[in-house]
Length: 114
Image 1 (cartoon, rainbow, N blue to C red):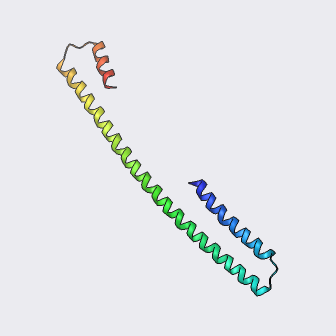
Image 2: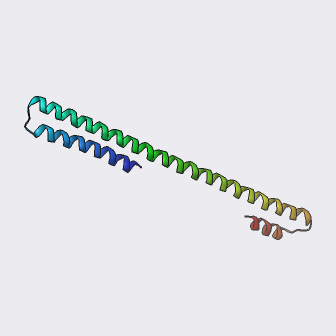
Image 3: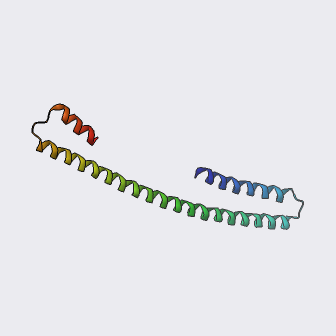
């Protein structure tokens, strides 16, 4: 996104400098020169507005993508956490049912949950 912003800013600055050089190096009378400068400034203003609109649209689309992705990620984390809790509860129930478990069997149950 920073590359696109830099590209847009560079294009605008390059256009303005190029237009200014072209206007200033062309032999014209004072009123003609002022008129050309005003036209170029107006053109630059329109280009800057277009770039701002484009940048705003892209930022809105990017924001939507991020919001959707974070929502999906949150749902996945909750689902996985619920699954782990369910497996731990099941393992604890097995432990309660079998009073004669030894340490090896307990380790196996814990490893199966993890």
